Structures are given as C-alpha cells and as structure tokens.
Amino acid sequence: MQIELVDLKLQYQTLEDEVIAQITQVLKGMNLYLGENVFHLEEEFAQYCGVSHAIGVGSGTDALYLSLLAAGIGKGDEVITVSHTFAATAEVIALTGARPVFVDVDLETYTMDISQLEAAITTKTKAILPVHIYGHPAEMDAIMAVARKHNLFVLEDACQAHGAEYKGARAGGLGDAAAFSFYYAKNLGAYGEGGIVVTKDRQLASRIQMLRNHGAKEKYRHTLIGLNSRLDEMQAAILRVKLPHLDRWNARRRTWARHYTSQLSDLDDGIVTPVELPNTKHVYHLYVIRTAQRDELQRWLKAHGIATGIHYPVPVHLQEAYEYLGYKPGSLPVTEAICESILSLPMYPELTLDQISYIRQCIGDFVVGKRHRRKSQRDLFSPSIIKETNVRK
Ligand SMILES: *Cc1c(COP(=O)(O)O)cnc(C)c1O
Image (cartoon, rainbow, N blue to C red; front, side, top):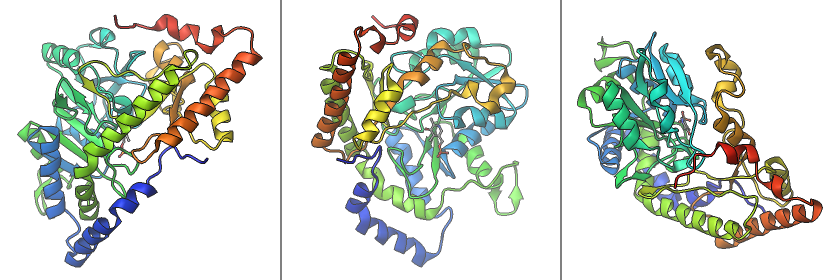
C-alpha cells in the first residue's frame, strides 16, 4: 500500500466540475483582480470566523506581514512569538524591522507556553504572535489577558487552523487580527497562492486593504507605502467552491485523528499521540506523534510505502538567518527536544480506515520489532523530554 502525507488529487476529483465552471466564468469576464469573487469570499470567510472584516491577500506570509505593518510594528519594536513554527512567522516580524523574541512551547499542545510570556515582555514589546500550530489553538484567554494588561497587539497565526475553535469561538476571532494561508495543502487551500486577514477592527482592515494594493485607496492615489499582495479572482472563486466543505473536511480529519489515537494508544509505549485540550477543537492540519526513535520509524514507514513529514526539523531560533538574534542550542529546551522527536503521519480528509489500520499495523510492527531487539524499553521514551514537561493536571 502506498500512502501520501497529503493527497490532494482525490479531493479535486470531487470538485472538478464546479471548479472548472467557476474558473471559466472568471476567464470569460476577464476581471482578474479585486472583483466580486474576492469581495464575496471576504464576506463569507469573515462570517465563518465570526468577525466583521476580511481582506484577501497574496499569501499567509503576506497576511501576517501586512497585519503587523498595519498595526504600526517596525524598527525598534519587539514581537513575542514561538520558534516551533514555520519560519514565516518570525520572518515577517524581522521584515518589519522589529525583533522576534521567542518563548518556548508547551509540551502537550506545542503552542506558546503562557507561563513564560510575561517574563519576555520589555518596554519595546508591541505585539504577541501566537501560532495555532498543527490546528490546535494557542491558549488565547491567557494571551489576551497579558496583552490587555500591557497594551499589546495580538495577531493569531492561524495559517494551520481554519475552523479550529477555542471556547466556542473560531480561530480568527480570538485576537486583534488573524492571518490565514490558502497554500494548497492547508485545510482550506487554493490552487495557487493566497491568504486572508480577518479582524473586528475596521480601521486596521482599511489599512490592510490599502497596503495590499500599493497603499492606494483609489487608483493612483497612494496614502500609505504598501506593496502588491492581492488575492486573485481565480483563487477566490476556487476558495468559494471549497469553503462550504471545510467543516465536513475538518470533521473527517478529526475522525481519522481519533482512530489514529485510539489505535496507537494500544501500543502503550514509545508513541506520544497529540492532545486536544478541553474546550478546544483541533482541526488536525497535521497529525503529529512523538517518539525517541523518530528517524528509524520514518525510514521504516517509508520502506512500507507510507510517507511522513517533520514539521519542523530545525527550530527558527537555530536557523542561519536568525543567528543575529543570539539564541543558542539550549535556549528553548522544549522546542529543541520536540524537533528531534516529532513525526507527521498521513492526514487528509480522504484517507480511509483501511489506510489508518495499515499505518497502525506498520508502527506496531516497528515497536514490537524494537522490543525484541532491545533489552530495555526505557529509551523508547525520551527522558529529557519527559522531564521538561509541564503536564496539566
Ligand atoms: C503555511 C504557513 C504560513 C505561511 O503561509 P503561506 O501561504 O505559505 O505564505 C505561516 N505560518 C504558518 C504556521 C504556516 O503553516
């Protein structure tokens, strides 16, 4: 059996007729930018997130970047975020001229460790940028409480969290603004590049609207220094076909996650499965397990036709581009330990129960094989990680 990490062809087959019809419409009209599809998608996606404004932009990275610019973040400022994320999160902070300040993550949810947040605040801190990593919301109540106390702007990196929920509210409606990516492999993906900012703040929304289009409110009248980051009509039309299916697709992901977790829990040693905190809804952009034998398990699964991924193998604070920030190995112990042990298993709505069972079977064979080859099972766990844990009671 061959199983991809993400298989997008299956989903396209179910949407093909409608997608082709919509693309044809756009092409016949030849109105390719900032037309009715972008306009309607903005309305529909804002409503989906429970907020009043949405601004379609060129990518998730731009959605983050333009939000920070619109909030006035720049040179001399500090923005607190996490290092356990895709590099874009920190990149956009640096691009504004501000300094990314990293705090460690929680070992259970892999989101920002809120116990470290307040200590990272200085007189230069202007914003907090939590990441709903893998589709699990960050602890937004605590983050918003700290932000309100210190008058900080909160931008959610919701690029992996379309439809995720925290205490009954959707990701995107939790902070002051949120950035989503429509990268093709995200839970809601275009067939090209795209992103969107959502916010309840009308003034912020209006600044982002200008920034994405060279800072112009009307053509050739430039109020702000912006750039070209418009979501195009073709992508918006495709996304409008897909948005009504998002909840059903997320429900499927959650079903597969439940099957993975219950089947892998039977193995009872060596494999740590993902956690969903009470009052949150995880949308499993990625299904990530942890094991001390990560590299061996990855090779084993590959040999059995199963593709896996590592999200992400090197934390941002140890990347060459961010050396200037002065972080060293050991700066963020949980983040660094996680990178050594995480493994993303195949996850997409069109998976089947047979495929999950086959993957479980292969992981089971691996664990049993290990047990025969080793006297001690102790090293199936990573003691260094277990010690760092701040496990919730
Ligand atoms: C995908 C992603 C981004 C960037 O989105 P693009 O659309 O690829 O620019 C930013 N942050 C996180 C956490 C992501 O997963």
